[in-house]
Length: 443
Figure (spheres, rainbow, N blue to C red):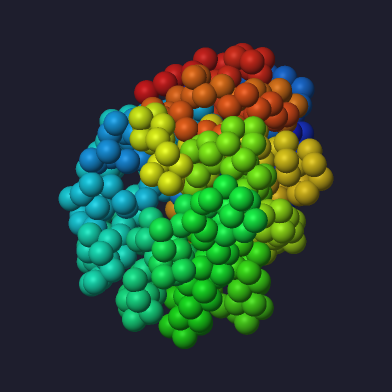
């Protein structure tokens, strides 16, 4: 089927486009992008006239999500996770390996891909474990994981246990052009901490995690990437000291990239005390830090030091979060809140342009993971996100598509949202509030 999207503002940084253009989809591919394309090009298909203000861009890619399946289906499944993804404007997600069993073998990777194919919504790119069972003792069979479909490796949830293991992982993955994604924390400094080490945690009697616990491991792995020529990607960066380590590595030509989650550039540890003291939806790892750290993340996004915005979507069941703060699991859901936050707090706030936001959420994730996407060039997959930058969006946890509802943004209102998500030429999500005359085709 052909579909012609007419009259939208096309933002495609790779091809230098930012203006009013039409986009022709033929089957599952981009056929043409140009000004005032004739409707006859979509003969036998559909012509969609976009309401004023809508933005057509390459499909957004979230390179850091937890889909929980296999083993933790009470929190999320691949099917519910990709439903949440397309509702949030993401045409593809990369999922972390800390499942049960751990994704350290081809069999688990194939199961995840099978579940994703059955759901038939967002594309899913599995990420394999660095070490067997994520125990930090011996490398997983990275060649086997790569052959099965993994696009990167990580022991996310834990740092790579030793410098030697990190070195071997960087050496091994460099043969396949894969990044090692590092969850940066020094376990001896983190200890049993549950909040950022600072005045707020002290006042509340919570054990702290200092920012340097993150920066120390990041610095170690940046040095190892420099030595081996491998590519290290710093996950969910939160501390200003880590950002400085990344900047220094980049200045020396090290293959180091990094990501920041929306909660780390919008929230601080003040949320631990108010409006709901000890709210476990403010508990995440890395923890919400001080204003200095939050502002540093914004600076890094503004000046290009930060490569990616990723959600670290971490669903947990209500009962697991509804306990004492220090006993609750770390993490929040993020797939359906990321776009409103990014448009409101970055684009409308003047921190970055919309084109830069697309780089952070589409172009760079595709480049780092070496997966299709990030461009509307002819012949590329027809993975498209249509944004509604002026749409008022109020977060309602009860209406989230994710199986879990653990978010600190419940009731918050943002300016900016998603109008539609198109994957492989199919409109898998359409937001009626955006006024778009197009039907969702679902699975």
